[in-house]
Length: 156
Image 1 (cartoon, rainbow, N blue to C red):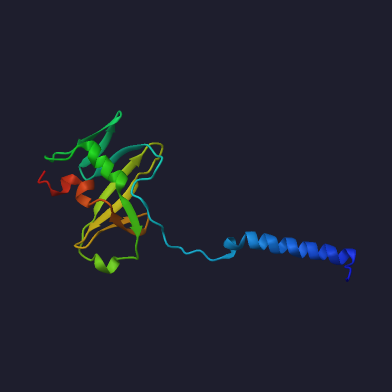
Image 2 (cartoon, rainbow, N blue to C red):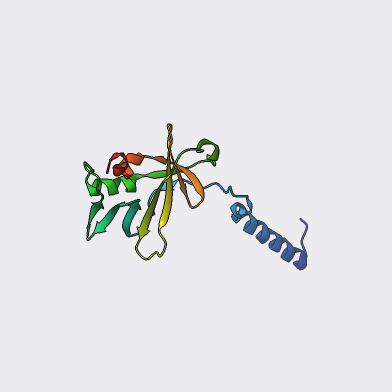
């Protein structure tokens, strides 16, 4: 059996340790895709104050919700808020070619402790509702645009 000298054994241990470090950190060396991931429509673990669209809004009033709108036949405010909580955004590629004449519904969501509101642009198409948020494109799942903004079909 061949014996390694003390410096050779030290070098072997150093190389073995470097290989182990590289192996445990292998995922850090792999390229990551820059595609957005699916996420909830509203951020989790935040205190929502208001959802505004044009002259309509869904506002927190103590522990309850109220709608400020001239529209009639609206669902319960708590149901509308529940729809916002259920909404899912699924990432998609830039649909700019599909939206030449569609006017977006601009909605601002206000969160406690934040100076700026979260801005969503909802594009209603024949096949889906497309959402632009933070310069990323998504499709809306689990809810419809009418469930989020029930006043858009009203004449008020």
